[in-house]
Image (cartoon, rainbow, N blue to C red; front, side):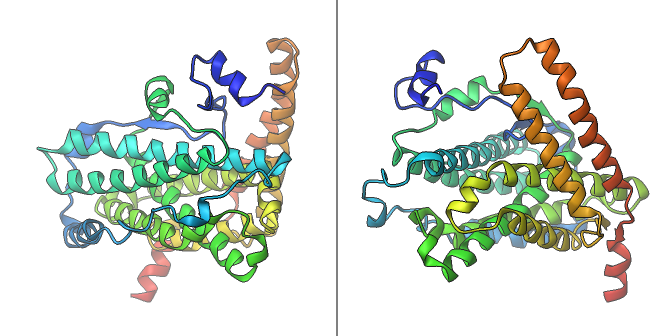
Length: 358
């Protein structure tokens, strides 16, 4: 195995700066979008709700929360072996994801400054939170002798273009699934302090409230655009983005099973809880959600994760790229087939449920 330091040096980075992981399906991505379309959005349908959420973001309830205490001031060499590597991987991917959000929100705020003042301020406040999270995670990596060069990431990562409506769907889900990921870990460790291997997890209760507020902002933004929830196309898109997020989450959790085992969490059960809760939460924003109680739902997700692990094994061998591609095709087809089966399962009409309640 090549050490992190050697990888850093080969990438032209100083010693102690971790070389970014190779970009894959599960690697957090950096995004850009059509800023002109965002600037032209009519927010009148949710103006008061958006203003209330921005006021809450402005209050900055967590401004004093992300401060390292004395509990961090110790040697962490006892976290070693596979557990150490899995934990560093968790920190790196989480930091990269938060930093990706910071870059997108910062650019949105800058581009909208003189065109959509309310959204510009909102995205500036969201960027503040994401930067705070990324910095806290990156500082945690230094406890293990590594850190990420965020400036290097900014310049060298590939930026993926998403239309604004895709950004709204995916960021909403990212923030809400982030809430459930953090709060479930926090509640588990609160009940089982013997698995509290590192003080970062004590910050998750307040941290997930940032995720929740961000999700609420994107929910109001989504509901301000009727074309994102009041027609058949919106119902299809909502199901598609729920499915892709849930498949990716399942793959990531099972790929990081060592990390979850190290803090006493059953990865499969944790994945199910996160998905059930996120799907139920999305019912308040999306016109249609998935039936996560269908008997075929989680078995199909697990098959996607198994196929993804096979793809990773093929990528790690030293064979010719053409041979690797041929070996990967059946597993790529298996993932596509399972996702199609999941997509075609009967869905739940969230708008009908919302209308019945009202």
